[in-house]
Length: 462
Image (cartoon, rainbow, N blue to C red; front, side):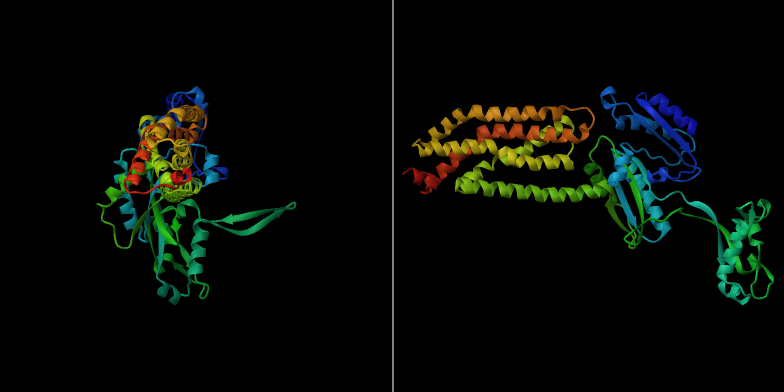
């Protein structure tokens, strides 16, 4: 299997710069890097050439490799992880993007539910590398001791455990010294006397009280069973995770589809389900950013209210903000960028940018009205005189953002959402500012005059 994996890498990944492949026990730095231990496990990795020198992304290469490796006979489980392993260690992101956490005590119930959820995930568009965090059960021999009978024969659990360990695994009986060097003398039964379960049942245990030899089968039952290699816990409860990555679909949409399907699944009363991984972290980050966005809008309004010495003018200026989201959505649709933490942060930054042009227009309208212009004339004159300044400031800003939006080199996955978000939001908000804000100003002024009210700015003119 290892040679077939190597052949798939070389044949289907021409972007390959160098690779490694290892089978069997993983130790040392391999375990730290997330490698799993076991003689049945094959670990491989590859570094691709620079992004500017290839046409396919790492996700596209991973998709091809995933489909090829699945066809290898005997492969029971497969995980493909893209990205820099060192960055995953630093950020703690060793898990997959979407994780459904099953918290419960029973191995059987949680395992059965995990298989159902895995089947659901595999049918969700965009979900790839679906797996269960618990390793395949390992066969083992279990010794079930009749404690009452053992105590009656003068045996305790420590004597039984130490004797079985010595017979099967071995123990250091004494040491041999020669020329200053010390060597352990390790003893245990020969392979032919401990190969079958019946051999273990016939082991002779010496009673420390009577000195007699007692067969293990007299005080214990030896049977074959399976059990997990390790038990994960969260908040002191057993947890089992069903995980997947996403491909060409936003993580939020995948999680939404999984939640809809989970509502149709009957969950035992003693088992709870929650989402973890990047999906959980993104949910927390979105909540914090939504609060940041609301605070930013409030602060911008308060600053403008203090500068304009009015509550109406800032309200008119803030009407450019909702259209910002329209521009952002259009940019997402046209470019395929999804809403993530970086693009959400760019939206929060936009709140300070989009009001600038509206402030320029409204403040100049107020200046013209102080000079004695009629309201409609002030609106028209302000639009003509401030059009060039608004276009110059907007175009220079858009030109600065264009390299970010069009970038395809190293690190573009981080910077591109910022450029696309701000480019779309600022473009639409500028067009709305030039057309909608002056119109809205005139409408509000007409309403105020109709109600017999005057703004403080008109009183200052005298």
